[in-house]
Structure formats: structure tokens, C-alpha cells
Picture: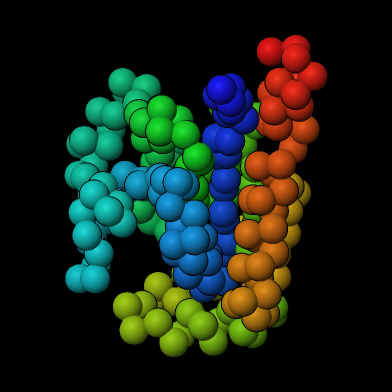
Length: 209
């Protein structure tokens, strides 16, 4: 009778960050579609819901008072002010994902990435760069959901966000969506094959389990 296989440590905490307009959201969606065992971390936010967004799926939309209460209770693994609104990742979101295995994907800015890495040093962080600042501005202006004030604010913040690239393990330039996605996919697959994660399988073959 064949022995039960040893399950490797396949739970990956993957952070994907970028300045607004670099294509992070699209890349996240492609990754989640291919890897259904990776759970999307649904952040809490105080900003208003856009017409295309679903509460509980895209974000947990909460008021300032509820956000303050969660901060006081220590409910957030990270939170930050971004473009005039507050965003946060609840600790419960991470623990639910850990219980299911596979992984969790964070779509957060560099401030959130810094806090997640401080609390969970094993988290893997990728920063997505635009091919140029000119292209980034073009992408921001092509968004139907953004008014001129939002475009100016987000573009002005982009350089400061890019300047924090040193917080991340990997940098991916999104000049071609398929190529950028291929690189992110390869990073995730390689992380799952790390010796530290796959060691139980090797030890089982040697009779060390």
C-alpha cells in the first residue's frame, strides 16, 4: 500500500505592489485565475465604492469610525493612508488563508508591504514598474474612473513609490502584459519549489520522516 504523500509547505504570502497605473490589478487577476489555491487578500478601505466594485470581494468598504476601531483593537496586520484614503489588511484575512493552504496574494502599496514584511518576514514581495513615467501618465489618463485631480495626485506620488523599490525582492517591468505576468508566475512557482518548502518530500524518500 502506497504511503500517504508528505505535503510540502506550500503556503506562500505574495505581495504585489506598484504605483497606480502600472498594471498591478490586471496582473493580480491573471495570477488568481491560474492559481485558484491562492486567496486574494481583501483589504478594508475608507474610500467610496466604485460602481464596478463589489463589497467583500474587491474591498471591505468601511467608515472612518469602524476603521479607527479596528486599529485600536489591533485587527490590522498593516494599514496606511494612500491617496487621501485609508487601507488595511486584517490579521483574520491572513489566518483564514493560512488555514486553507496554497497562498495569499496582497495587492498593497509600499507602506503596507513594509509592514507585512516586518510582521511576516517570510512574505515574498514583487514591485511592478511601468516602462516609463510618460507611459504611466498615459495609462492614468485613460482611466474613465479618474478625474483630473486624481490623475495629478496619483502621478505625483508615483516617483516616491518607485523610490521604495529597495523594499522588494523582485522588480518586474510591465512593458508587455504577457511577459510581465510570465515573470511573476515564474517567481511564484520557484518560491513553491524552494528547498525549505520541499524538504519534507525529500526526507520522506530517505525514510527520515
